[in-house]
Structure formats: C-alpha cells, structure tokens
Amino acid sequence: MTARSGRWIQQWDPEDETFWNRTGERIARRNLLFSVLSEHIGFSVWTMWSVLVLFMGPEYGLTPADKFLLTSLVTLVGAVVRVPYTFAVAIFGGRNWTVISAALLLVPTVAAFAVMEPGTSFSTFLLVGLLAGIGGGNFASSMTNINAFFPLRKKGWALGLNAGGGNIGVPVIQLAALAIIGASGGPRVLLGIYIPLIVVAAVLAAWYMDNLASVKNDTGAAKDAAREAHTWIMSFLYIGTFGSFIGYSFAFGQVLQSQFDRTPLEAAYVTFIGPLLGSLIRPVGGSLADRYGGARITLWNFVAMGAATSVLIVASMRESLALFTVAFVVLFVLTGLGNGSTYKMIPGIFQAKAHALGLEGEAAAGYGRRLSGASMGLIGAVGALGGVGINLAFRQSFLSYGSGTGAFVAFLACYAVCFAVTWAVYLRRPAARPAGAAPATEEKPQLSYAEV
Image (cartoon, rainbow, N blue to C red):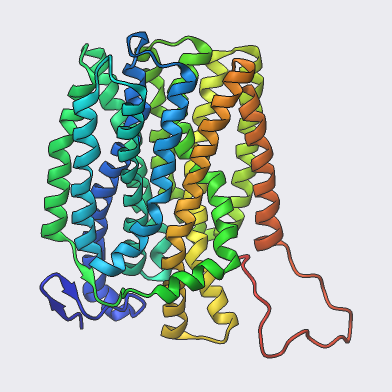
C-alpha cells in the first residue's frame, strides 16, 4: 500500500505490478503531467533570448557576434544549474522543488521585461540573460523526479514524454513571438504573457504533485555517479543529441538572419518548426529504445545526423536557403529522436551493471534508480554544454568566414566520434575466447549493454 502523509508518499515500489496497476500508475501519470507543464515553461524562459534577439534590430547596437555570445552565456548557465537542481529534489522533495523552481522563473522574466528597450547596455543584457539560464535547470530536477516514479519497463516512454513536453517549450515561445511580431507587437508583450503562466504552473504543482519519501538525500550516490565511467560516456553522447537540439534552437534564427539576410518575421516563420518536430519526436525515440534498445537507435541516429549535416554543408556553400532550411529541420528531428534514445540508455546501463554485480529483484532496481537518478543531472548538465559549444562555433565561424559552414564541418566530426563511441562501448561484441579457454571470470558476468 502507498502510505501518504500530506504531500509525502512514504512507500513507493513501481516495480511491483500489483501496486503499479492498482494505484501507482495513476499517481505517476498525474505527477508527470504537472512536471511537464513546469518544465515546459522553464524551457521557454531559458530559450526566450533566442527569440528576443530577433526583435533586437540595429537600434540596439548589437552585432551578430554579440548575439551569439549572449545566447552562449544563457546556455552555459542553464547547463551549470542542472547539477544543483538534480539534487534539490532529494533535499526538498519533487513536488516542493517543482513549486520553488517554477516560481523562480519570475525573476528572469520580470527582469527582461524591465530592461528590454534600445539604449540598454550590452553588459546589462548579458546579466539579465544569465538569469534566464535558471530555466534550464528545471529539466534536470524534473527528469530526476519522474525517473523515481516509473518502473524500468516504462522509463523510456515516461522520460521521453517528460523531456519532450519540456523541449516543446522552445517552439511554443517561438510561435508566440511569430504571432506577436506579425501583429506588430514588441518583446514586452511576449514577456508579459509568460508572467501569469509561471504563476499558474507553480500553483498547479503545489495542488496536484507529490513528494516521494524514498528519494532521500544521498550524497554518496552523487559521488558514485561522478566516479562511474558510464556517466561521462553518456554525457558525451548527450552533447551530440541534446547539446545539438538546444544549441540549434538558440542559433537557427540568428543563422538565417546573418547568413541569408532574413528579416525577424521571415526568420520567425521557420525557426519554430525544427524545435517543434524535435520535441514531438522525443517520446518516439524513447519508445523505440524501449523496444529495440537505446544503443542501437542512438548509433544509427548519429549516422543520420551526420548525413543531414553533410547536406547542410553543401547548402551553406551553395547559399541555397530552401535546401538549408529543409536539412536543418531534418537535423532537428534527429536530435529529438536521439534525445529520447540516449536518456533511455541511462537507467538500462545501471540496471545491467547491477545484474553484473550479482544483484537481483528490488536490490537491482534500487541500485539502478540510485545511480541513474544521480547521474542524470550530471549528464544533462554536460550535454547542455554542447549548446554552448554550438553557439560559440557559429560565432567563430561567422567572424572567420562570414557563414556557418566552418561550424557545420566541426559538428560533422563530432557526430562521427559519437557514432564510434556508441559502437565501441555499447554495441561491439567482446572477442570470442579460443576453444577450450577458461572464462575470464566466473564470479562476475560479462557486462552486456547491447539491449540498454
């Protein structure tokens, strides 16, 4: 039975099918719904500067390099705060921290509303942009919280839906900006819309979400996750998938403006499409990983990302706007698919390691939840740093060559390395032993991650 005291659930065992079917699934889905809402608005606030820079014409006195630097710093803060946000769930409780983190989004939104006008110094815009980075932290705490609610067999779907619903905050704020620009509104109108939405998200989280008492503050888990090689390997792969998604979300409109001379309205007409499709397909990536194995989906996804990037290089060199736009949207879709498959790999990897250590049943499930929950914050933080690298690469490419071609060549090389790492670590079969040779170890089974 689930013992509930106030907003704290004292006992939670999602791997018990009787418990899950009787009460667990209903409670988990309710928490997932309001977690998605809060995370969704967090993503919108984090990426609002990808939209605001489209409003900032010559009267603001900012160069394309200034704008790429601004969005790079916003992305950086969003990446860094993911680490403390991950462990805040264990300190405050998932429901309590969702309320707090949602309410904190008022700070950057109100600050941007106050300073968004010509004549404001670039340093002021940088400072206010740094505040918006806290919106990126909501993802880490939300994923850590939802990871604890669902059984292993449902994690790919649940984490994919949670993250996809959050990611879709990017195209939603871009669509809102398109409507406002089309209606001759200004950036303060956009910001004014989000202030009451933030309040609503915080209130609904307070009313309908729960804390899990079993998610206790475990500093040992954080240390163990940081010492685990798979945490850093998956962080690198997440740079290739989510780092690409968030980096391109910030940069797409600026590239269209700087390289193809699109107006803010013309850029806004297409910038939302890629993040929208990439967000919607993320749960599909998780579901495919549940069925076929996250490592397999991730491997071939990097092949496809490399192919799409090659087309982008050709389109950039030929200055073909139509081909460039289509290839960029396809690349967005692939980043979303890869986001879902890589995140599904995380709990599977630690579950496989638990079995290799001889753990079974609830002991194995507890080991997997403990390390996967702790590692998710680190992986999410390092992965988001990929967005910083993408914006800095675009900035340097435009400074050096006047286009984004050089940056795309670097991204292609990165995807090739991600493919090689995925294959070498998670899919390459161990070499066969010579006939008659004794097993290398009898006590410790050979780790196999092909199905994660």
